[in-house]
Image (cartoon, rainbow, N blue to C red):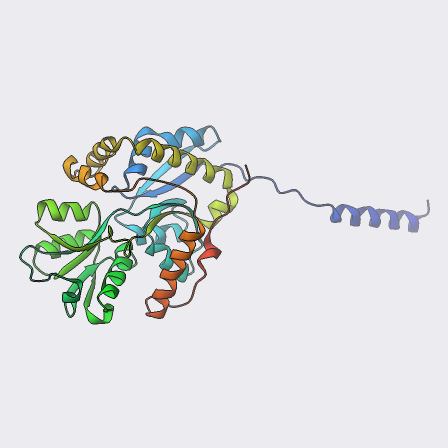
Length: 319
């Protein structure tokens, strides 16, 4: 073979090699999986106590699970968007703000929200949602209570422009509510149950009214979901199985939540007696509900841009 023919043969072989498909290799398991949680999310608190996720992931090569506590949803999703947390559970509103802000997060599962309520102090003259006009109404900005506040006001023909909104974390709102500095407080269980049982609060509306009800969601960072879909599915499997078992063991959830939070067991029993306990994939109905919320928030100037919720829904790996 001449030198020129040899060169042509080598070039052809090289081109053929380049044209061969490169098979993607699954990423090696991370040394640590980081899960965000709130003490009031009893399913995750119970999973942590029983080490269910640790056991499942250890068999898949994960060295450890780190549990990172947050007081409510928005700070958790900020941490997730910054790469400090891999997955966690929040209400319906934080993901809307996160996606509108460009955070690379994905919805991975759905679960019913805990009960929310519009509370007023004992002795308040406020009786109806219409009475909130011009009043000081507190809720966590970007939290699920934000959504409930908007929906509740709309039932009375009001918007946030008709009240004085005060954006307070649950801890700060508790102090302000008990200190007489609020006319109303929109919040979720167990804060609702605590305020009713211990502070004499009165609910003028709550999410037993299906017009105010919504879902909560498990979310993951897009990077984690993309690189480790099997690990993510394993975590969700364990949460789903635990949730199913817990539907008939609500006293156990109350005991675990009481131990984790220091809130009395009777309060937690009230919470779980009225809670819907279930877990499943994100459905088209969930996506539609979230899209309606996002569109409403954009129309009211609550978020800065339109978003398409479906773009942030994770597709699980094939079995």
